[in-house]
Image 1 (tube, rainbow, N blue to C red):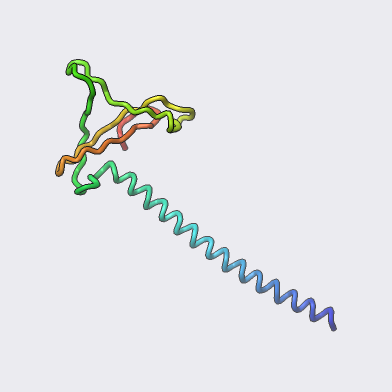
Image 2 (cartoon, rainbow, N blue to C red):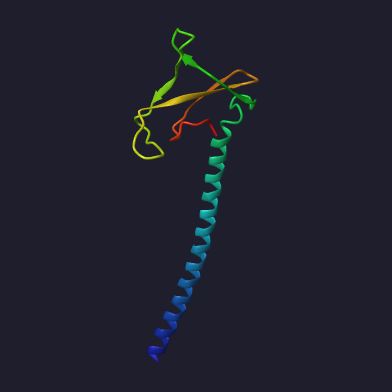
Length: 122
């Protein structure tokens, strides 16, 4: 009879572990969903940073900011990006600075373009 009691105890223990496993899997799925939603929200906030002014939520318009004294040959601004890795791999030496000005409050937003093609802002 001892054999049967041990076996019954083990079956009960296995059933309890399977219930715990199912509960933990469900909790993991919910945590992954919450993490995915949070990541999507952060991505949308970053993406919308180039669409609306962070000060007054006004419309952003592209502006050109140059350096130098000669108006016929202005120097475009660029920033050292030795600390950033290039999306194409390796390191870049400098990246252009793009600027957007708010049409409502006039606040100037500067963005570093580290895209591999150096294209316009998204």
